[in-house]
Length: 456
Image 1 (tube, rainbow, N blue to C red):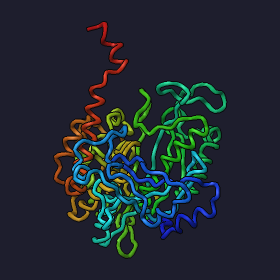
Image 2: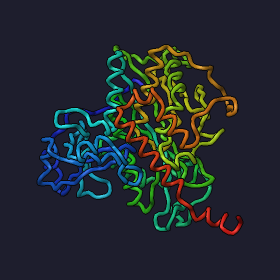
Image 3: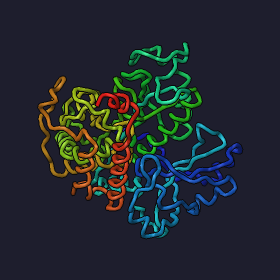
Image 4: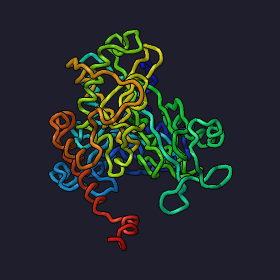
């Protein structure tokens, strides 16, 4: 897409922003950890001016934790500094009021050393580096993210489908795109739109998906790719908070319910040249040679970056052959069975949709590695394989790793990955994923006990 819906600019000072919001009592400085989860520190309103001055300090170890907040063992950067303080710096967007607590505001921040050097284990810097490489090549990516999620019933232990807002009974059946879903869940989505608008996040669409209590939210295309990833991070926070207000829980687990579809995080992107022209557009539905080269680059590196697309132990439950969570290394035009789809529509909007990522993926890492692979393909003029029409035969294609140990190994051993992300982040991410895998692989579930205890 050629549109730029970004409104990033130098924001007003936090103190000035607070002056118009007397009900805000607490300000939270938040930054994404290695998994893309926001973590931070709260300061009282009276001390919020420290944020603009770069005086809000957080522990260096804050972003280097695993999926349940356990420290990542042996993180060299943390050990070498004694887990010292890092001063966080605002990203260029206004604070926003929490959708869960109107007395709390959140300021999105980044982590840097006092001399301005980026903290290597802070994931936003990885995407910033990729954007800089596009600029050095005279190019600029335009991106939008969309995410799927499930609602559930938070009043019951475990995980159960949500209760219908009208009947109060547990939901059943699949009603993708049913008009009544928009009517019944209208207040819920109006509150999401309102909370997102107040946080400078543009929601361009939403709908029910092919699962019970499953929905998708689409965000606006922007030529500020950092904002696109920030927007998705904020959106997930807003969805959870608004869901609680409406009596639901919201989860971004990639496949929380057995027998229902997986939830994905899809990246749409095109690339502009120095004159602002979309280099994927050649006036035809097929798209330009540059589009094919970008596709080839992504497919070539997909197995090595699968640990980012499926980052958690539960992520691999989503992956299935002949499904909308495709695993085969193939692409095609307007074909949702494939991991790389070229949507139809006006030629000027010709773009790539990357569909491999799960709803739990870190949007900064996903966007960074997909864009990096695409840029490599463009630079090398790598030819793509032939596009696939219709439902593919999975057995005819190589696939991405569909089990976590293989994904960890491919990511860990990839020279390309090690060149795409800082060494300390690579080290911390691999250690976090191995720790997660080992912890969950060792867990004996009640289901496992029930089926095996008296049978073997």
